[in-house]
Length: 310
Image 1 (spheres, helix red, strand yellow):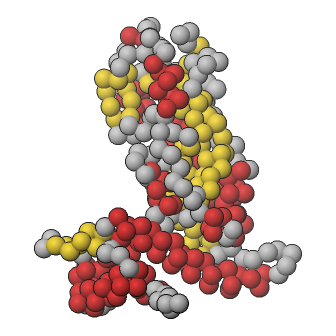
Image 2 (image 1 turned 90 degrees about the horizontal axis):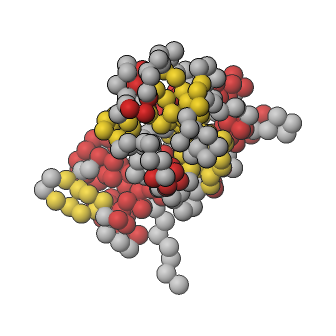
Image 3 (image 1 turned 120 degrees about the vertical axis):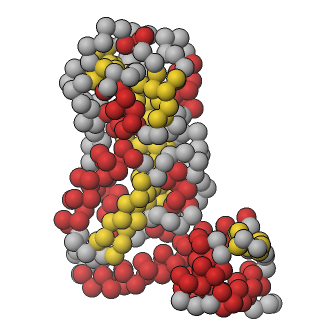
């Protein structure tokens, strides 16, 4: 039997740095070593793995599909090494209290979740665990989205819209936190909201929403596209158009708009969290999930609602 050549933590760091920076020289600067040292280390890593991990060129390096997969695993292994230290040091809290929750907690969230869902959760979480250090990144829910951040080892937990057009990456654990309805939002006082242009944004879609949309002949094609739901709401508030938006995006909607119920067949979207099986068992992720589950997701504001008949 051939002896297995394990990768060292430093080799994992080199692999990640070379992937993230796009060049061996930049990776060397980031790690405090030389370009030749990184190049030699990468060759040794490729020998141990038994696959070409980088395409070399005059303009830099680019990970191969094998390299991208290896870097994702490397990030997750390095993260678990950090967790090992944090949880071992916190294990002395006592059997009744459980291990102390310390260290960084990396969270990727889509915009409206970061604005309206996470702040009270993190306030309570850090009050209970003052040595915990939440780090939040806002990620657009297009392409890999927040799930991709977790799968690639860049985040411990992703707050995501589940069941949309992008499937959950294999190997992740997901849990639904809430099912939020969509509503029509339009300028207050407008005599005929349906005559307004439709304002939309790229993230505002799922297979179910598209199916519902196709059955509503009163909804025109989107003629205005914005970058995010905040820009959409601002445009509607200024009288530029109408929009169909999920409840979380309508949290704190200004008095210059009205929110109309779309009826019993209205579309909904699932908001939930994703993490990896190994991180799901850690004290920090468990504590965050507990707080998320005990938080009521903001709903459609009660003020000035109307009813739209389709």
